[in-house]
Image (cartoon, rainbow, N blue to C red; front, side):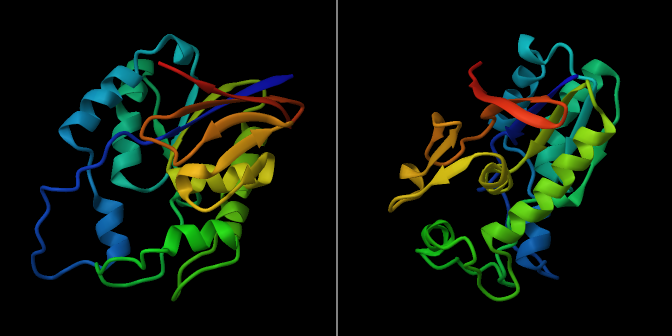
Length: 211
């Protein structure tokens, strides 16, 4: 029985329109609330109409506003509910304030998959929860076509479980492989779409879909 999982990073998020007001949210809450940019909304509308997703039967997102906002157009088109699971969220960064992360934070995370700061998560810890959610979705919807809207870090972390991620010196040099085939290189861009094919819960193919 073949199951198809589509993984997509959310559309472009808004960076420039926010101003801090009192009370100031923690970095995590502020990040969860971040909306799509105007360009991101347009991209999400386009994404909902691509032919590859014509047969989608279920849609899952993380608990972030930007992932739900990316999914809402295709969910409305298909007349289905968006199912939210917080385990699909991005890697928790571990700082409470909105101060800038260390310049080498993302490099260190991929050089050492157990690296984390403060009360944050490592890539390995992210991969465990995302993979747990991924497997539950597969078991719940065997033989179906499912869309998961998540984040660059959660998708890349999942690939450490179901594929191979090789890292050199920068995120741009990171390479994702499945069965020795290169499927993606660099930082996962907004609305990058991956198609994961499974036979009896075993991943048999992964490819990047262009649109």
